Length: 401
Ligand code: SF4
Image 1 (cartoon, rainbow, N blue to C red):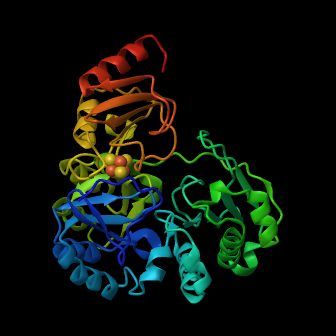
Image 2 (cartoon, rainbow, N blue to C red):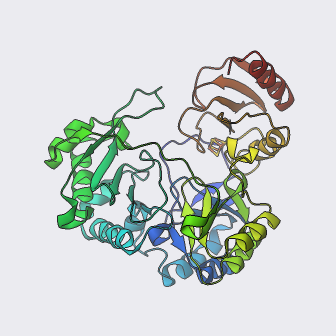
């Protein structure tokens, strides 16, 4: 297979993507949650290489399939109500729900999904375009995760506004769409229509002028004072739940099934910060997750490192990002408050935003970028992982980072 660098492509159930370790099949569970039975069924049928990724959009993707094994798996996903058979609809069915959110959030998400399926005009939406529903008791999620976010607590809709290509901080624009009347789903769909009218060939809402989109949708923009969401990890006694992180966003199929066994009758809520929230016996869940090697402590150094698939799983990766990330965590290279992004190539799949430091693979070695994205201008080039670690340490000691 020829290595390619394709931006904007997203695999889905009907449009799987070939990677260095076989085909990737992405499942988008409605409501961003799976029952333990769903997990066991998927784990039992996943004829891949035993690896599962959680995505930054609360989706779950199974890796290492042979092409001919995908159809049976996809049929099972549809039969369990975790996907739809219509390929064009499944491709755009990207509606995330905040972890642990209640029935109202689920019904709004369902209404958005129904609206997307009902009007073929939405099939022109780019594959990465997505919606989110927050509030209603759900854990906070970053408001720039989705292109259109319905916040049921503040009765507002938020869209990330246009930002400079090198800017990491998208400015948000919030407005009051009168959610009490229609719960926000209709307004969210109206904004998507406005995006389509305004945007082609933009891929994300952040690439267009938010004020123009609001104007197209007949809405008034207003300042947004929503606080930045901090991803929850560990015990959440107030929710009677735990949030366990997947090291570098990945878990084995076997351990995922074991986690489902720990969850019992509870749902597994997929979090966009590559974690899973579960209600239940908090001490027992924490202990069980710890035994599986999952992240149960917000101070765990693995949480300060983001890594893409890299080599050998991705044909674009020339460096073993996940193995190097585990080494960096073991060496405790990244202090609290900082983020290190290991990217197998400049595409930066795992973290599109700037990080404190980025190591981007090139020709089997790393380039070091400070305060930018994976495709940013490097401070140093051609580093082995050990050399990169030494350089990061010396920069920290001289407080350059
Ligand atoms: S960023 Fe990583 S996962 Fe994405 S294409 Fe490059 S090597 Fe592959």
